[in-house]
Length: 382
Image: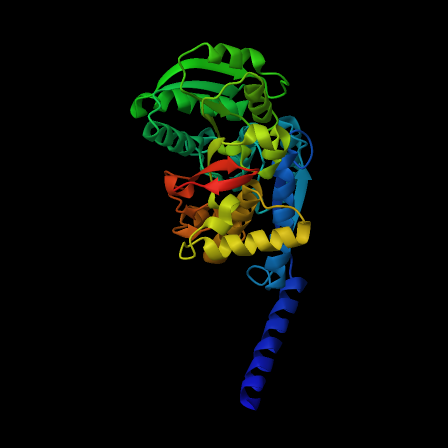
């Protein structure tokens, strides 16, 4: 027993010495741009919280390459123009090794050329496939792409005997990308789009669009957007007495949507989502189970709020960068990019990431499960 104690003491001493050396060295700076305030704050706030929590965890464990990491976070206030100002600061003033975020597709598309020109890796937390298609050398992303979400929805609808679909999409970058995929993939799943309506992301009344849909032979509706628009659609659907199934995108996969829509109006809504939102229902043998339970437990204990898919996107972005820095044994931007692109079979909260020169999202449809909102909560469908 005494021998074991001596060994443990020696290991602890070594760990402390290693940690001391890490904090004495120049930190590795990683930039972050999130929509912490503004309409997309339900995305950015959990992302900022998560990134800070993971930064502290990495530093407690001795940092990376014997150096502390320093996260430099800017709030773009849900405004792509402010995201551009933030990325200029990160690249020119803060001299970061890599950047995670932004939270939205619009902000990501606005800053991606800047990251590309500066040759600094950007790991976005936004969903549209346009971010990584065509592939940009220095741009990656963690959320499942809209094309994967559309396939999940159409596959579920087809199995339910639905063939005539109405689509209702936001006019912002995320909504436009979803609309494009919904239209392009409809034929492959024997779907006929019988109504194609659009709403502004700040609109507060979608009765007109839903009334038009009600007058068509549509058997179901797909709404594509992020809060608050989809919540308005859910409320207006109830007001108009529309009973046909309503599908949403993964852009509403958080408790905030249920809160905004109202529990009774959200009842029965279907959507593809990552397993994080239903972590307690994931099988014990699933490769993500342990990680999901730890992240959800740590987040909810610290922030006294339920975990969301969006915080998971930031968790994955920073985890992937940390993995790449360790694997490449360098924090130089070019080396980080190269190591990131060589990442294979990396399990995170969203799924299993395998990046290649042709795929900078690295996920498959397996990263999604279909869920249904039931009694104000999330039910994973089999």
